[in-house]
Image (cartoon, rainbow, N blue to C red):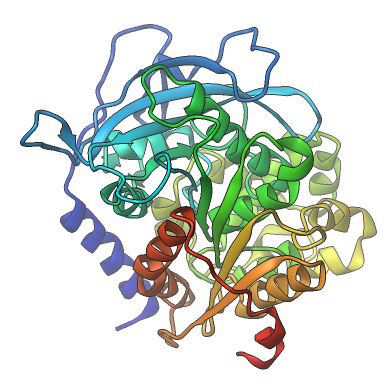
Length: 440
């Protein structure tokens, strides 16, 4: 079976296994449409935002498409609320972020108050229809040449089943209709993750408080977002008591990851990365105009409204050499142009000690978000005095980089959720920094 067929089979399996739901078509003129999918008016930010980071802008009940009635009248796995809250972007400017909070129906059986885990989604795409909160309401949504799948739902439901409250962030610009999603921007993502915890604690009726032990969970893009949040927490959000976190397959070195995904199923992420750079720094557009051909500029514009799955169907195995004027790859341009390197280098994760204890997991055969640079993140944090538990994951070593990558998530997710739950329950864990250099 070809790698392309495997990718399409995985997508079909997700559709069949998770079920279908249609996004509601609302008549309100404030609603927007992205590739034929209605984005509710809730996602349009107001002109003025609160001054405090993490302050709620608005909230409303969020119907979960995968939900069952409980025997005691409470829905399973919990009661969800759609939220919009205020954060600060990488330019120091206020930004609105959407997401969700789920109050679990399951009782927390551990010691102390109910914990809170903020889930940072993996790569969803760049169109507003791709957001994780919409994915909770509609596990699968079809539109005009787009397919959105709530791929993070399983990790959230696993946490909820343990009685852990869950908040999920949509990140800056993913869902909200006022700007382009700043894909893998470490400051934007780290701030959004930490402020999601603040927003959850302030939500009326939520059982979590400032005394609730907090954990962070993320894989792939989410792993990078959690890693960034852990480095930013001591200065940006010292009031968020991060006790333990899971950082899976983190893109800590964007230059290395960009070179690795070129020509794979995830080549579209290069375009999302470049689009995000322009959103954060409009002057970067001049560099893109210098290097990208007409085709390359059209590809980036198209990708700005696509989700992961339709981007894979459209662009899998293309190379960025087809997007440039000279036929160079984006990685080659990065190597040759010092100005082009700047935004990539600014996103490096591993330069500061992380907060709390952190489990750094990476698939040893992951050649999409490459194992070597994820392992290096663990080493960098250990050298900076971090409390790190490094977990190399064995798995598929096949022809499809995407399956090699996702396999480590599927193999490790149950273990990761249990590990995080135990740490939030106060169970001790010993860092294995002394042996990281000796492990694969």
